[in-house]
Structure formats: structure tokens, C-alpha cells
Image (cartoon, rainbow over the protein chains, first blue to last red):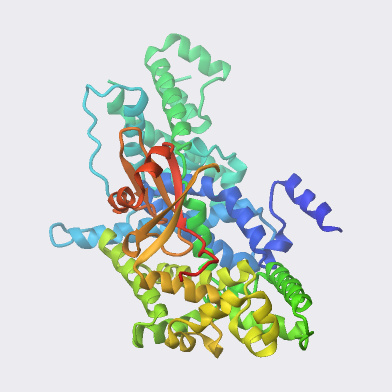
Length: 201
Length: 331
């Protein structure tokens, strides 16, 4: 197949040619980055709750993608694979952030070593009754509410309600059955609605 | 349908639009209110996903990936550039041919394969070892570059309180090492060995300035790169940094205005780094480096820009990077 046909096919499919990527074609990789960098940054931004951290994470994601391309099996879509890597990077960053926090708090508090999923180290939102339910304030409240969720719940809400993934895509990215995705999302949204309770008055 | 069932439906489906749900909502104010709130929350959540990514995101990712080659060596990464390298070799052959044509007496022709081979060596100067030697030896230009890289790393360390990750050091190292080879390749400029040894007549005919440059500065430099074949661009960039001033280029994003400004090396971007500069209507200048951190360059920029330049400058966001080294060397 001549190159213009294959590149057209790649465009139609909405993805960069895997053969070129595997051959370490830098232009192809740059195109891949251009296609996915924004959504991966958004994902990291919402999962990690911090812009700087999200920048570092995005960078790490694409570095891992670059390293992993030779091992990438085409049984998942490239996008799903990249998102899966992004989730892993964010999870390990959250875990190490939680560990750092625990170490800092350890002398003051007795930390239970159950390995419970801990929410992001952010101050208690404690939204005042005067807090309006619209615009920038709702946005801020949402950020805090998202940060108060467990990482698992936050992932579900972010993938579906922020990033707009379909259930099937979520299942592929999270690596769990459709039913699990739906029930997890249900619990996550319930937790989010509860965290937002104070905002509406 | 009970209130509990409705909320469960709202959570799993994200909406409550089934006939049973609608029937319940008609008679239940609390649930109607909850559905309305969720609708607002969902709209705001989608809005959260539209936060713009920083403009330097792409450059930063690619810088990181470029530093990552099999074995983390930029030299190896350069081997991926087969097409551009071939093009450069092609250009070199054409230029060489032109030089041969101009020369009155035809000198011995350099076999193409040999040119290609020595070009490849010149383009892959083994930055890692060059670095170590540079840091240990006398303050040759390459050592200055290494020192700047180290300074940048320290500055970053001070900025975020954590030592830069190993990978980040690679980026900085690569930022200093890659462009030296890049400049030579991009400009199609011959390295010292191939022309100096293989085709002296052609060298004189086509590139007298380049050889003058090489004869002049920094005798210690040859030892900094492997095979004693530093690219011409290496010397020039390094010379410039010895002078303590780096010529930078401000380019309005989206094309258009270009302004060149000389900045002290301390306050300027590293080679191949692109900073973002915003001139606001209230006179403020904000400078973000490739890592998204605020830089202290505004005052330097104010001084570096002439009165006329400042008057002509349109407000907006610019890309600040080192300007390509001019072809005419200082007298």
C-alpha cells in the first residue's frame, strides 16, 4: 500500500499509523502526542487536582507511551491504551502523595495502616451557607467535592461526567466489566451529590 | 417509584427521564430539586473538562520524549532522523558540488559515503561523556554550557523544593546537547574533519567564514566532543554564552511580529527551550518557562528591549527562544 493511502486510512480511523509509531517515526509520535495531549492533561488535571502535578503526569504518560509502543498489542485501541497508562500514572502519583502526607502527619496522629484509599490532601471544603450555586463558585465547590472522593470514585466521575467517555470505553480503560463500571459510577455520583449538599443552600 | 429509587436511577443513568421517574418527579418537589441540581452540577463538570492546557505542553512533552532515546542518549535519538539526515547529506553534496564548480582547478572529490559517515559522527557527539569532561576541565565553552544546565537544575530545585527527577536532568542535558548537533545539521554546515581534511580547496571556496570561526576560539573545545570534530554551531553557541549574553527571539504567537533581544544568559531560555511571554495592556510582562514556572525575566526584557522596539511591540503572547546564531561572526 502506498504511503498516502495508508496515511489516509490512519486519518479516517482517527489514529496515527501504528507501523510508523513502532518504527520510531518521530513525526508520527509527535502527531500522536498532538492528538491526545489535551485530553490526557485534562484527565490528569481532574484526577490529581493540581495543574503542575498534571503537567508532570502528562509528560510521564507520553514518555511511558513512547517506551511502551514496541510492546503495545493492537487488541485495544491506541487511545484506550494511552488512557489506561494515564490512569496508572495518576494512581501512583496519588499514592505517593498520600504516603508523603501520612509521613508528615505520623508524629501527630495515629495513622491506621489499613491502606484505606485516602482522599486528596485538601482542606475541608466547608462551604458556607452564603455560597451561591452558580458560576465560578459552583466550579470551585465541584473541584473540592471531586477532591474529597476516593480515587476510584473520582476516576469514574471524571471519565464519564467530565471527559464524556462511553460506558464501553470506561470498561476498556478501567479494565473491568460493564456492570462494575455502572455500579461504581452510581456510587461515585451518589458520593459526589452528597459532597455537594452544602453548596445548594 | 420511591425517592430512593429515583436517586439511584439518577446516579446510575445520570438522568431521570423514564416515564416512571417523570411520574414521581411531578409529585415530589425534593426529588425535582435534586434532579435540577444534578443537571447544574453535570454542566459544571463538563465545563471543568474544558480548562485549556498550557501552551507549552506540547513542547515540554516532546522535549522529554526527545531526551528519551534507546539508552537515554540523544545521540541515539538522532539516528531516528534518517530522512532529515539524508536531506542534509544531500544538501551538503550539492553545496560541495557548487564549491567544486566554483574552484578553478577541480580538487579531489570526496566520496559521498565518506561525507555521510563523518557527518553522522559529527551529529552524534556523545553528550554524556562530553559533559563530564566539560565540568571537570578548564572553563571551556562546553563547560559553561554544562554549568548553565546545572544552574537551571538548581534553580528548578529551589523553585519547587524537590530535586529534579533524573529524567528532568536528562531533558536539561539534552536541551544543551541536542541543538548543538541540530544547528549543524539544520544549517547544512560541514563539520571540521570532513572538509578540513578531505577537500581543502572546496572549503576555501565555499566556506571561508566557517574555517575562520574554527581557527579562532577555544582550543580546549576539540577535546569536549568525540573525534575532535565539533560542529560549527557548537562553537558559536558556546562563544555567545561565554560573553554572558544570549540573543533571543520574541515571536508573536500565531505568527507575525518578531523582535530580537539580548538577554543575560542567566535570565534567558536554554537552547531549544521555548518560554511564553505575555505583554499585558497594563504594562505587566509575564514570563513562563518551558516547565510552566514564572521566570524573573520581565525586568531583563524591559532593559533588553529598546524604546523603539517597545513602542512597536504589539500586546499579546509571544514565544521566547534563543535566536538562531547569525551566520556572520563577530569581527
